[in-house]
Length: 113
Length: 525
Image (cartoon, rainbow over all chains, first blue to last red; front, side, top):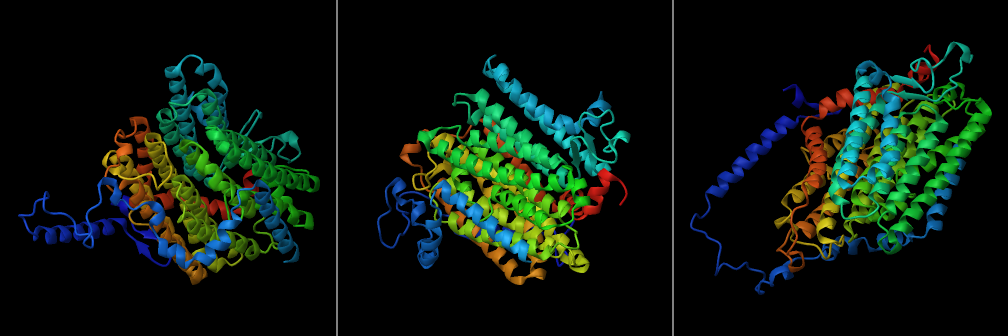
């Protein structure tokens, strides 16, 4: 039991063993609910998924590619990305300029403070 | 024999990987089986020495080793005039933490690489460079000599650049290696200039001696900037992180996983300089450099994760997450540094924040190493890192998928994995310093989870794709390497407090105890 002692954070605590017990209880409840479902259901013909009335796409056609995910998030932060992405030029001299720039800034701060 | 080995562990820590590296071209000529056996032997011996040394430090306190001395444990020989004249390794609890990280990671990564790189040519050079990189990292985190630190920094940088360029990849990898080499060299030149300034003033290279003589003159301040900023760049802090996605994405995955540890060795150097060399001086404004780390940390966390989300190259995405996770370490330790002059705040939450930051270093090395290895496994079977072209791999690579899930949940700070434990320490302690910073850290974790849900969906979910019909699970050595890191991720998550008590808390105490660091070499207190 000493292995699973409570992690003290100074302001709070977290016990992984209690968390595992809670997880097990949650899984038990989920399985209990699942067991109350229809027992006569079988996968197979005539049980196509409902996709807003559209036909189920062939094989891999139904897989949403990575670029299409989080479109809304990227769209809402468009102005942020328009500023930050161009900074990543891939040009080594730009990388050096950032290093020297931060160094110069820190030098000013340290000498002034 | 046992006593001899235990007495000379710090020397063996460097000698073993160097021997493995330098004999590799000769042993490699004897065939694949002999070469692989030599690689495994070298990795096992290096890890065993590293773990034994860490065990010794954590059990009995700081280990000193004077190279070339008749009595290696005596830092000040009778005829030295009270000056440590030789190279001294000073392995305290913080160094021990870093040695454990490098030892465990290098073992898992080397085993993984046996299969992952088996199709490549020039493996003698590859493994020679990998062992040099390991030696460089172990030297950086063990030495108590500033010039020696520079030498090991150079060894790790040059070996790292060569390994980044190892897979030529139509010149893309060579370009990334060149960028890494250019920035590393510039950073090392700045470090060398700082060393010149310090030796010119204090006539010493030993860190403890320099710390004891430090006057905090204008030249010392200039030297501090020349040391701290390049090391922050080497650990991938925003806005000096640009080399990270280039180098991490193009290097072989086994190399990328250890480049993460190499970056963390630079982070160790940064903390060592700020706390052990410059900290605890009445003239020094702790808050200034504390906030320097905090600002770099918050920028790294936020810019790293937001740049990761739109990426289509899985390793580039993970590289940006490495930048983001480094931000947590900078934030945690930065809060500790900012309140170093306030004993109450340091006791109430400063040390906990530092513990969270240092715990996150070892956790990150394990789960990010694991994630890079899973990305390498997918590349090994599919030949692409493009998330738009991947999908359905969970059907045929179930173990890789499970290891990816463990790594992804850990990096997102989901219990019961190790990332949660260190992030919880950071959230709750940083909240008492500044609720805003803690909230930013939590938001970044949510975005991290979102980003890895995208990667999980793109690589493993969906129906089987026709172009990956021949894909099957990766060879056993690759699974074994991933399993080694995954076991740590789960173990440190299920039992975090023993890790904190035995490994992290002593490292925190070593970091804040500047007087103790000096006294270990010069005596007195």
